[in-house]
Length: 426
Ligand SMILES: *[C@@H]1O[C@H](CO)[C@@H](O)[C@H](O)[C@H]1NC(C)=O
Ligand SMILES: *[C@@H]1O[C@H](CO)[C@@H](O)[C@H](O)[C@H]1NC(C)=O
Ligand SMILES: *[C@@H]1O[C@H](CO)[C@@H](O)[C@H](O)[C@H]1NC(C)=O
Ligand SMILES: *[C@@H]1O[C@H](CO)[C@@H](O)[C@H](O)[C@H]1NC(C)=O
Image (cartoon, rainbow, N blue to C red; front, side):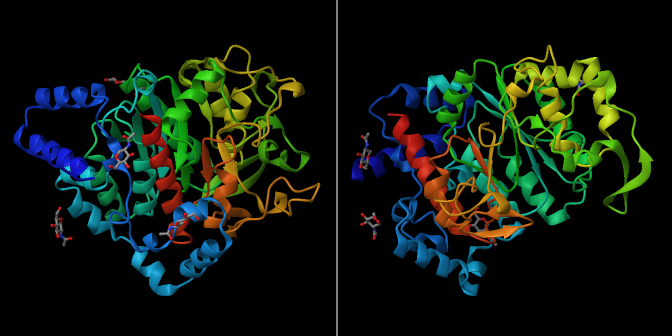
């Protein structure tokens, strides 16, 4: 431990004394090749934690009942919930010294392996408030070889936008979407936000291999290395929910809609059938796709026509990507035949617990166990009690997390992932 501290201290000294970027780079590459270097100083410790640190995360991750009860009790304690909050101003001040911010927040600023370095990822992050959620998510998925486009809703209040911009300014590979839009629930702009980031990411770098989109309430279930290995094993294929549209959702694409006062409503008009008689498939907003898929989205003329057609539908985010995924000629796609249908459970993009699919373990109808947090609009906002089950799933990300509802779930998950990432790097 003492040795470690000394190593850390001398590194700090070197970093402060030597400001030349060339020197910094050679220092970082020394660190990578020096096998004797122990990265355990990048572990999250109790000193880094907020009030959540009174929980025993290793017991929580194992589903220990007493610890889970203690965690549950804490999350409903008013004082605890208040102490967990971090005001936007904190981030604006703390990022004035980026080097110090990244060190104190323990961002990983060098590739942990060559395998990861050679397989950069592109992220689209669509956020609108809750800066702390965003910062914790960014820290969990951040790697210097990856590239991140952050779309901040046009409606976002000034202090949150300023805080997000301040955080972003500390990272050369994280940038704001060049054309922000005002997102309306279930309407076209949600898709446009991702489209704008796709265009920016495609334009800014030719290096990245796969694209992943996330929102502020997502959190990873896997380390960057695990994500890279899973994506490599896809061998160019995409992974997302894409299945026959249920009868109850067909009205969404047969009736025209418009945005009125920040909400979506039907116009009373019928829509023409989809272009090229394309079969419209059902999916969700979150996808894991190859660079070739993104190129098609940006350049394929059939898809441009589909996009124009989709603009006045209801919740286009829940069919557009799924439909493109079944179009012939799109890289990584599959045929439209039903035998290729993929559910959200089989895809790796996103783990979501819907209220009506949850139930007891011995139920034949239940898709997954009950939510240990609370349901918001039919979706589970995870609690600490969901973690043990979640990390056993194959999905790369889960939705939804909320620091205001259960900060312990995020706290224990991020600790678990960091420990795993460091253990993998030895
Ligand atoms: C790294 O250092 C920590 C603390 O001294 C120690 O517990 C751990 O075993 C070390 N890990 C490796 C792989 O050397
Ligand atoms: C936390 O829980 C683990 C596993 O249940 C246990 O081994 C460990 O001693 C506990 N740590 C503390 C500080 O209570
Ligand atoms: C601002 O940040 C600096 C260090 O980055 C810290 O020393 C100082 O206490 C902070 N001020 C406030 C008001 O938080
Ligand atoms: C890509 O970037 C160039 C300038 O670097 C710009 O002229 C062009 O419009 C951009 N394309 C897109 C699709 O954003």
